[in-house]
Amino acid sequence: MKKTRKFAKTAKSLAMAAAVIMSACVFSACSGGAKNTVNSIDDLSGKHIGVQLDTVGDIFASDIEGAVVERYTKGADAIQALKQGAIDAVIIDNDPANVFISYNSDIKILDEAFADEEYAIAVQKGNTELLNDINGALAELTAEGVMDNIKANWIGDSATGKPYVFPDGTFPDGGMESTEKLVMATNAEFPPYELMVGEDVGGFDVDMMRAVCAKLNMELEIKNMEFDTIITAVESGTVDVGVAGMTITEERKEKVDFSDPYTTSKQVVVVRK
Image (cartoon, rainbow, N blue to C red):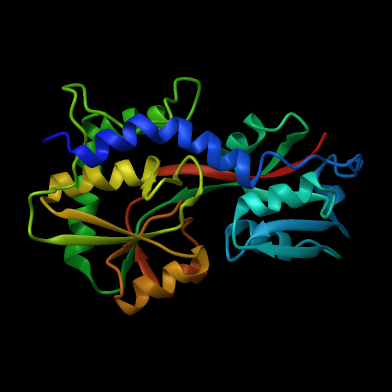
């Protein structure tokens, strides 16, 4: 697999661009002196809760008695509203929450969390061949240790903030020389799984799918769209797969099929300190 100019450029600029983008859209707002009134999940009753539209956090918040749910197209916008005192808490996935608090000294994650959830790749119902191919590739990448390496590259104390590089110094190029494409829908507002760097989408899910496509000898094409439109795009066949930190839920399983889970997460509550 060859190191392409595009990925070399992405690797060079990712960490710097991510910091600039995040600072511009989320991390410059101050809390304005608003006090925290949420110290446990039980305190969420009757509060204004921010979520990203159509996420599992949206589902949890909607079930909280008396809560007013404020829905945002970006998790980052919910965090900004929290910092400005417009809402009392944000329910969001754990890993993006950790990214946000790493740039903000005035917010924190509550120790108490909701149940664990599993992320998987959404595939159009009935496309058994593609689903089996993806599951086979995921199993091989897991057995080879590549999945653990990609995760460590993006999540945890050793995270680099740069695209994953194989030990031989090459990038997983997603079968760039193949004439067959795999079109992936995602939402680049979910670091560290997806984020925009200039004109490129990077993150854990992107590197994973490049590695999957390298196994399948397919070229990866990424379409960035609003999170709440991804399932519809997969269901209609507009794209081949949806990969965006997508949690397996019963409601989504009625519309699409899911691959084997490739990682787990949980919903957490972010509040002002």
